[in-house]
Length: 185
Image 1 (spheres, rainbow, N blue to C red):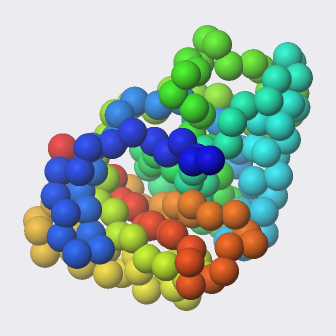
Image 2: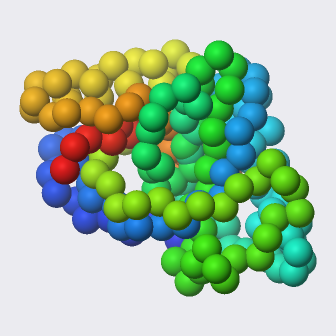
Image 3: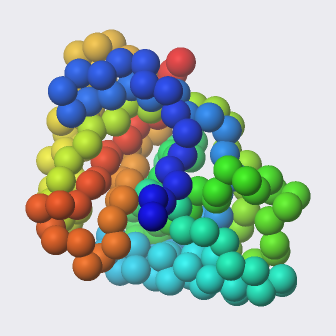
């Protein structure tokens, strides 16, 4: 059984790097505090509660990948997956909703901290990596992605976000992670 992922077109592929044009999407998001790992866990639980029936219709919504995290203090357009970013201990954690839904057709979350919103089409520079997405590895991969963006004279918009595609029980060496930076089209 495959998990739905956000729709995008690859504009450039170079090794582990890609430039992607993401289509418009709808996301469920929550702002949480804590370090990267704690915030990811708290955010995931809140969003999972919504898609597992914690909504006005008690309707289950299919899980998608990735989960993203991004910093709340930065102006960052939504990435397609679940992303996480940190600033002053606050993170926005997101799930992209399945393509079959629009903002109007999704049930209202029971948890008032879960927000639904439309994401405009956007372009991202992306670096894929495997392993654990701890603070050190995310920092190192983000530095590599920033170097890629700068060497190609791309104009970045905001800070990097983290996208994680696998459930927590996935062996570390089989995990798919990405750092993403929105760039001007």
